[in-house]
Amino acid sequence: MSYLVDNYSAAIFGAISRIVNNEPVAQEVLQDCFMKFWDKIDQYDPQKGRFFTWMINIARNLAIDRLRSREMKKEEKTDDIGNYVTEIGGAGFSQQNVDGIGIKEVLNNLREEERFVLEMAYFKGYTQSEISEEFDIPLGTVKTRFRMALMHMRSFLKE
Amino acid sequence: MKTEEYISSGVLELYVLDQLSTQERKEVEKRIAENDEIREEVDQIERSIEVLAFNTAIEIPGDLKNSIKVQSIQKDALPKDKEVIPLYLKYAVAASVLIAITASILAFDYWNKWQTTKSRLAELIAQNYQYAETLNTVNQELLDAQSSVAIMNSTEFDRIPMNGTDNSPSSAAIVYWNQTSREVYLSIQNLENLSRDQQYQLWAIIDGKPVDAGVFDSNNTGLLLEMKNVSKKPAAFAVTIEPRGGSENPTLETMQVIGNV
Image (cartoon, rainbow over all chains, first blue to last red; front, top):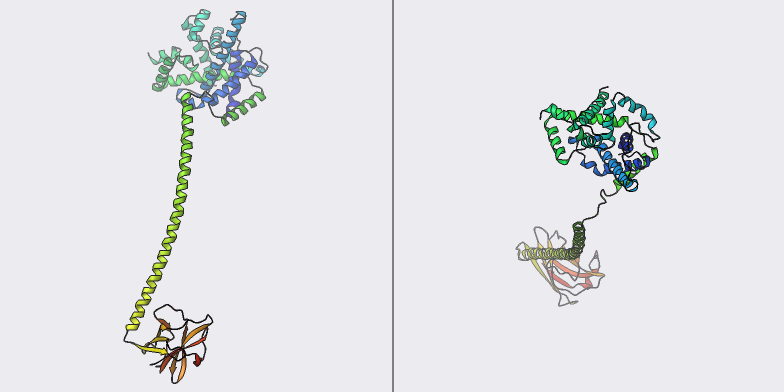
């Protein structure tokens, strides 16, 4: 189990951090995540996908749940939402400097609109139709952009 | 829908990001199982997400890493789910406890009974041994009696009655002597009881000299006593009282019975 922590915690923490955009909360969510991995590990089915996909989806769902419950609280207080523009650079994280280089490399050649859809879908937990409605982009375009963004990732696989 | 169309529809990306409804997900899973091309595409999408995740990784503080590891170890030691126990489970637990108690009581009861049975069995086995021993003794006595009777009735044995002397007129004993085998047996008819340090001694008078034919106790119960073989035909047999173990020469004053061959 400590193998999982050593090898995957940073990747998972990266995803969680960019979703909740708050380091102490991200740390909490990360701990919850690993507790959930231990609990549910016997439910993982290799037929349905890779192990990392299984982990990252648990992490993303926990983080999105946390984000939304926090947004709800904020909404009650200030009635002011919608300013959660998350940059893939991940502002406000002390440990991100090293990783920053890698991020750029991967996302460098991404077109702005593809990058935006990827951010919304991957880091904000928006569904494609939510992105389409929220930002007034045709659903087909959202799909294509998201696909293109992932295809771009794929080119790094082959290297 | 053709495979290429299906792949480019974007549903697989949603599948990998876990953004489908249960029904949609089942549909995709079915297609993955049926179509290797789709399976390969899903695998590629998954790897793309991995690239994204590892390239947007943020190293976590070492102490957080350790605390997660410690938590996971503690978690392994604890029961997996700390969910609220449903009522039926509580009843089940209560029932199990009741069954366990009942079983224990029954077990103790049976154990007690078993112990009693065990000691009774031991008694019976001991009794059995006793009976077997008694039977053996009786058998042996019967065999002795049979061989005694055989000797008494045998024509090969001379029967020499010995009558009481003046020392003890009422005493009587009989010697059976086999001329061929030289065997000597003695049947006590009536002899007085002796003190512990005394024994009777049988003598065969051969050529005018007394020859030792063995000692015996006064309280002998057997029908016939086997004595020492007498090699030559004696003139007479006599019994004297001697110190325990017998003497080399007879104490003639104590002679109890005598009979001529």
